[in-house]
Image 1 (cartoon, one colour):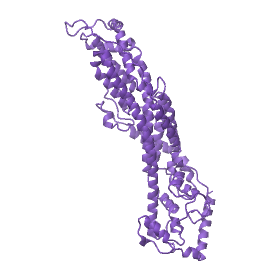
Image 2 (cartoon, one colour):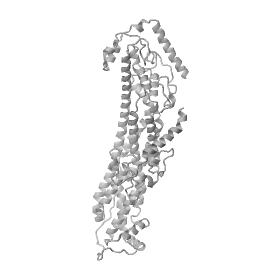
Image 3 (tube, helix red, strand yellow):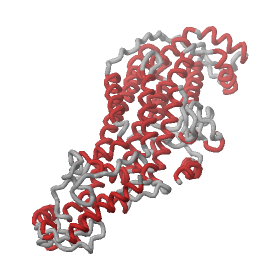
Image 4 (cartoon, helix red, strand yellow):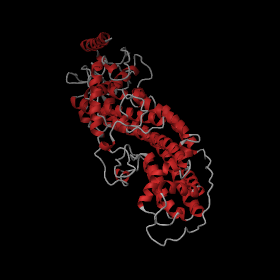
Amino acid sequence: MELRARGWWLLCAAAALVACARGDPASKSRSCSEVRQIYGAKGFSLSDVPQAEISGEHLRICPQGYTCCTSEMEENLANHSRMELETALRDSSRALQATLATQLHGIDDHFQRLLNDSERTLQDAFPGAFGDLYTQNARAFRDLYAELRLYYRGANLHLEETLAEFWARLLERLFKQLHPQLLSDDYMDCLGKQAEALRPFGDAPRELRLRATRAFVAARSFVQGLGVASDVVRKVAQVPLAPECSRAIMKLVYCAHCRGVPGARPCPDYCRNVLKGCLANQADLDAEWRNLLDSMVLITDKFWGPSGAETVIGNVHIWLAEAINALQDNKDTLTTKVIQGCGNPKVNSPGSGPEEKRRRGKLALQEKPSTGTLEKLVSEAKAQLRDIQDFWISLPGTLCAEKMAMSPASDDRCWNGISKGRYLPEVMGDGLANQINNPEVEVDITKPDMTIRQQIMQLKIMTNRLRGAYGGNDVDFQDASDDGSGSGSGGGCPDDTCGRRVSKKSSSSRTPLTHALPGLSEQEGQKTSAATCPEPHSFFMFFLFTLVLAAARPRWR
């Protein structure tokens, strides 16, 4: 195939030289007026443009036959063509980022609104039903919602332990209120140790733990996936074009002007080969990009049903009400069992009176019916995700059709890089490895772009996180970088080294955000933390990435 391509260019070059040697009047005496008009419209000085064609031995990029371009014109047009392609790439990236941002903000706002509505319902209903059992412990409920909100928005909290801490604090406070004599600290420690066996809140803590961990991890992983996808697009858009690409783009877009045939539009296959060579590294994003989007579509299955994200996030207050109801119903039995296990309580202050009788009621709350908003948002998001699945490999064809004024057909009237005429070489495949014989762009397939390789790794990490979330597991980014399914719970980093699990006794071990959602700053994610462990993420990622490159290099050769 390489020999055929070289033969094609030798044939075209020979034909051009023969035409010049014959002194073809049509090729010698053409006016450059049309080229002057186009050149001036781009803001360049018309003094650079000759009145008629001149010999083209000075040209470095375009064919060296008779030409309307001086060296300065060729350089100016080369820079301009590169800027035009960079602008086109940025425009395409911004359009994709806008699509992702629209979906992210719509779904993110909905989930946060569900949680806010649940907290408002609690604040409205609990004081009247539970009296001082709620009002004296309102801060504990506020703190729980604050931590749920932080977890959803990307803070590295362990949700199961956060809930366990909440129930432990609440039990201690409520038991003291139900038995107003001042109990000693030792007695309360004994109560805490027996809490799991006593089940003072009934089934509510277990039900909330099972449902909340799955619902919150599914919701936040989906929204994080949208954020990661948008971030990858933004970073890839900043990758500069290679010098070889700049030369090929100039030849594609403006060498026809220099040749005196500005009306000749690029042949379709010629344009595709140029842009497939220029965007070879970007096309290598395709496989992991598709994996990410497929995983995001799949995780939306976890939004529905009794244990789905919408039901659980919007009804946290119902499990809290059931818990307090259960505690009141089982107060006498609970007290008896506590005394059996811990002995008769010793009062710290003599003369404590009998338990004050307070009027406290039970609260029965109904789940709020779905409004259909999330169904609509998710349906739109899934349609958009399917539409952008082939973004990276379709980008060359899209740019050729929309930005490069490509000829509608490959015939004798399109520009083939040498002259007006058919373009014969075959179109290359997608990706870096397939450009080894690209006739238009010299591509070193042994030197992949490092920025894009890093973004491929980020896509892979987020995909593993989503796969873990589908199974109900919250896979940390540090642990999600292998080739596994991501079904583990992220145990590859010791607790005492990374502080990646929240201690039941101390919340000061919480680490920074794993991948924060928009609007959550690092400072906000740490506001419940007094100190953090050093984060190994950057070093780990660099080390892992080096291993991946080392393993893959033989294939590039």
